[in-house]
Amino acid sequence: MMKIVQIQAYPVSFPVPTDKSVTLGIGRSVKRDAVLIRVETDQGLIGWGESHHGRCPGAIARLVDTTLRELVVGMDALDVSGVWARVYKMQIGSHGMGAAAALALSGLDLALWDIRCQAAGMPLYTMLGGRSRPIKAYAGGISLGWQEPASLADEAKAYVEQGYRAVKLRVGDTVARDIARVSAVRAALGPEIDILVDANTNYTLDDTRRVLPAYDELDVGWLEEPFPAHDLGLYRRAARLGRTPLAAGENHYTRYEFDPLIASESIGFVQPDLSKTGGITESLKIAAIAGARRLSVNPHTSATAVNMATSISFLCGIDNPGYFEADLTAYNPFRDDMTDKPPYVLDGNGCVSPLEGIGIGLTIDQAFVAAHPLIEGPCYV
Image (cartoon, rainbow, N blue to C red):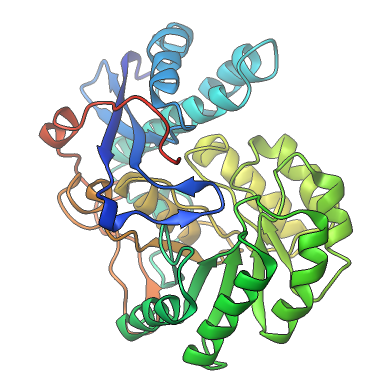
């Protein structure tokens, strides 16, 4: 038994310079947040994970530092399923904080998998039963936002010139402006590049009915999150309106929300975020549910290199991997400066591969963490 002796959350932030800000369906980005989770064991092993900030990183950190810490300190760090079940029972399934607890648990779970990898001396993808392999990537993150069509087409072309074979555009503005933007990008990139679109829950059913014929004609690969996660009825209705498949999952929590979503046959692509839905332990279950329906898993990428590198290793460890969302945010110190190396490198075929080394192959710069304390307030305005 390897006991958990300490758990500490580190909410971190940085302001986004005005000239690097991106506007999308949830507003204009003004800062970036994340919550890092550090778990220490009685045998000296230390694991790191990332919880999504939930747009209130101080609250997620507080939940980790009080309730989750009291629930799991003293448990076996290698018993990730037992830790997960205890937190679920006490904070998600019974009178708890629901989504916030899922975010907090996700970072804890990632840290425990890091410890398991260290104890076994294995890369994460090996621990998951996989091997290093190329994973196709699309140009995403907080990029390709609402802008003039010509400017957007130029940005998309620059990513293709870097080697990406797929890009994701932010829609959810007006139907006319969305169609104009996607049309300009398709004209600029030609038929060989995959174009995906993300409405950030900002469409109505009528918007979707009006925009889907154009997306069908433009051969859009998926329409992501036209509606909020709880509007399953709208997803069912929208799925019948065109040929373009819907995608969803970054705002669904645990297998218990993914199961009815997948069973509804309203989505063609499954998008759990490992820092939101319950960590690696739960995402493996979600991947199995998706696999039973012959659906691929295309994780949503969170804020830091920890989530990014973990997501690539996770995709190498399952049998239904889809796209990795490469973060092309113009300014992201959490991606570029928080760890000893970049979380991924694009190859000449538009793919990424997991880093070599124990766990996810990254080392956290704790001086960087200390230098980026929490900034209160909303991250989009």
